[in-house]
Structures are given as C-alpha cells and as structure tokens.
Image (cartoon, rainbow, N blue to C red; front, side):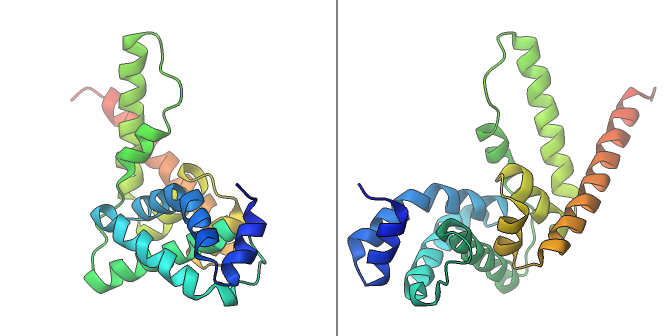
Amino acid sequence: MEDEATALARARRGDLDAYEFLVARHTVSAHRTAVLLGAGDDADDVVQESFVKAFNRLGRFRGDAGFRTWLLAIVGNETRNLHRSRKRRDGLALRAAARDARGPEPADPVEEAVAADRRQRLVDTIETLDVRDRDVVVCRYLLDLSEAETAAALDLPKGTVKSRTARALVKLRALMEGEVRGAGSPG
C-alpha cells in the first residue's frame, strides 16, 4: 500500500482507510505491549481504547517520536490506568512473550528442555521484580524498545529509564544467581 508517513498524514486529515492501515500495522506491537505491561486478559480492550484515543489525538501528535512510539506510550498509559482503576498489579503475562521470543528450536530435545527451563526461570524471576523495574526490563528487553522509546512508552525521562534499567538488571542478575546457587545446594 503506502508508507507510514503518507498514511499518517492522510489519517490526520480524517481518512479512516489510512488510519485503518496504521491500526493494522501496529496492532500486534500494541497488543504485545499491553500484555507485557500487565493488561493480561484486558489487553484487547486496552489496545482498542488506545487506538481510539490515538485517533482522537492525532491533531496533537507532534512527530517528535515515531507514530509507533507515540502509540505505545498511549498503550502504556492505558495499561497503567487499568492497574489504577482495578488496583491490581498481578504481574505480567510474560510466558506468552517468552514463547514468542524463543527463536530457532534446538535440534536436541534435551537442549529444548534446558532452554525452556531457563526461559521459565527468567520469566518467574522477572515477575518478582517490583512493577517499575519489571516495566523497564519488559520494554527494553522483551519489546526491544530503545531507551528513548521506553521513556516515551512509560512516560519517564530517558535518564530515569537508563538508571532504572541498570538497577533492575543488577537485581535480576542477583536473583537469578541466587536461584542457581540455591538449586545447587544440598537440601
């Protein structure tokens, strides 16, 4: 069809077909973001509400960041609103993301079992982090967002993302190392 910039310009003028193109292009990313930030079963609703808000706010889109980054910031805000309104922070549905991010399947079933166990331990450990640490780890490493995109998605200064990511990785590493040492100790 057309490129994103053309579709965005047309959508800003009210062209629904052009906006539909943008929706189709970014739905998977928006949904994955909502799930990874903790929307869980409500991810579809969060994404739908985010696209409606994005359409209604297209006139305010300055273009400082790309449309995707701007949209993911809206998804992040909607997800946080969901948490606040329901007062729940049940953790993230990281298992689905871990399965999606597996990459090529090892040829050896033993390797697959070991890899699956490592992934599950990582997911379980990420879920134990507090929500602020979990959010930056999810954005940076599971969604592959840059620091700037993470800052926009979480509505944080870039420096905060950088320092929070560093601290979260130290905590995550310590938790993982403690788990490995604990597993190797005679019980």
